[in-house]
Image (tube, rainbow, N blue to C red; front, side, top):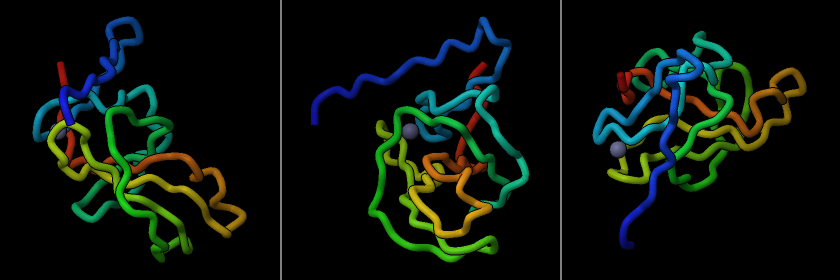
Length: 114
Ligand SMILES: [Zn+2]
């Protein structure tokens, strides 16, 4: 309801690429926050991100992936509602704990902003 204030990512200083929503170009994250590019989303290649901003979380649900079972939520652009990936909340897989609190951004759902 009302106007949403988006966090503006200033990547000038860090030389990083800013990633935005492909629907409305709201800033979501930067290339400096990529932990791994070796992930697969629903729509193709995906990045594991340390932090993503300007998103709303969907319903928490358990999903079984190749590496185990996770409690996740889809993440949606808070401006236009476009689904851009998901957030890992929890896993029982001991060697996958590093993903907790991290995000997946699907490459096909984001654009590079300047
Ligand atoms: Zn958007």
